[in-house]
Image (tube, rainbow, N blue to C red; front, side, top):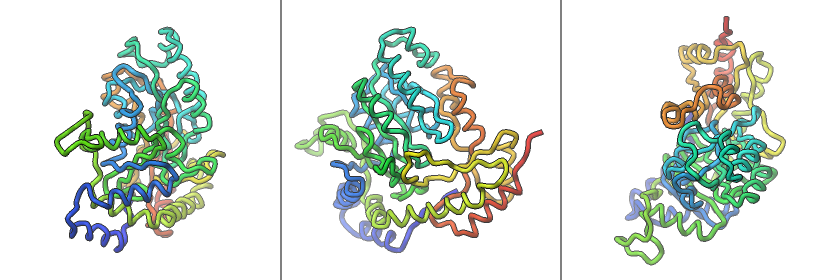
Length: 389
């Protein structure tokens, strides 16, 4: 599905760390944090072991605890919901925009008003069927920049400010994206990037929290390192923390990759442009669409939507037989088995999310795909489109 863009310089950067005396808690993590901080233009960058761990620390920094409510999206990778559940809080889903797949800000506003009203009758519409009536408080909004396109932060920020709650930006898929000429990661109170091998840059595994909040940054640095606060010795722990540290080898790879971040983004843009050129006139195929406020899309994956009347899963099976790996993207979070068991969700709860989940198909995508490879995928897709009935 995707191949990381690794150069000899990247390999040499990692090799130098292996040959040094620091494999963890060394100089490379600080260097990588500075590279991200300078690129985003924020006060703090905190390297962590994954995007998931970064989001979890943001949830902790926002003071979200058992019974609290966090408004988020059901159209995402499961980690954006799981980090809320880690703290025994309740994810409150609202449906998404049918064009971008990002959380619908108008529904967020309605949900925030109802959840803050104190009226159980008003809240009932938005809460899951089970685990309701715990008397929780609305603590945060957690939007996701789906597939590398920013959520609508100019609409979400006033909602968060009005209700005095945190805005946690899941930018794990959008490093380098621009929303009204502003970089993602800095559009909420805290933002998180992830660096899995299919991301815009990779550290193999790893993530980065960015924020301008001094006290939150200090807390999150402590929590990632087993709860050690400034002044603690190795065996002193001020907070209940985690081993969420980013190791030196991963950080070294990140430093090297950040030196050519714009080139990496441009390569991915070129691959997306070729897909768009080939597929925009194919009957039954919807190519990704950018919202007016998206100054720059940071292409994480290339996801098409098959129009009603085309059998997505049979099309995917035929592509696999032709040697083209594809994936449905995303499967709705509220219909994951553990979410159905815990909260009683069912089909029909979030119809736009469910529609996108049924029709979306991720094609092979990376910055090192050649024009011929993109053309081959498109040729095979047209050949394998399977119509229902």
